[in-house]
Image (cartoon, rainbow, N blue to C red; front, side, top):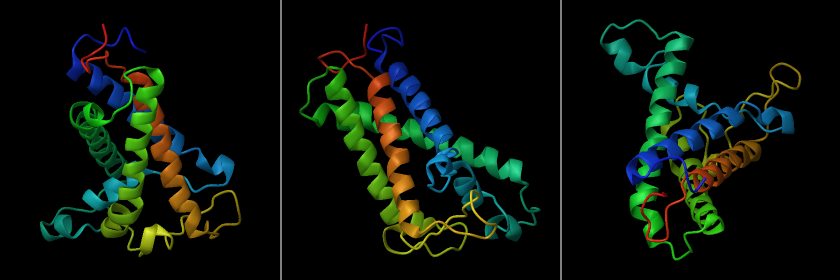
Length: 190
């Protein structure tokens, strides 16, 4: 997609970031097809921000959020985070990566960025935020998400959660590299 998005680097990066985040987010709901836990970042972020007994909301006398409010708040936060991280990639990280500004170079650079985000996610963000009080543990290996393909109450092994986080970020990285295709000088495609 070296052409057709925008001649403006900021606009091209924002559009690419939106699509990469959206595609990866949607695929996260389908991971159970391949026996991985669904990766619902919308509800994860929403639960952390406004959901189900959030101490800040309760402290201000705000009633508990509905599932829709949790989902919508989390989706908004997740998309804005994806856009912000894409801008960091487009304007800060990508110019420092010594790969050619061709299709494969952009995909590899964005894939490396996505994998770095995955490591940040399962080593720091998921264990520290822990909105479900699930104590994810080191590398999130203790976070056992529900397995809806199996008997009710069954949980995926913790390593599958970490793997699903990695797969999610690989999909984000590949799509970011496919959609964000700057010219050889790093500016937006024409």
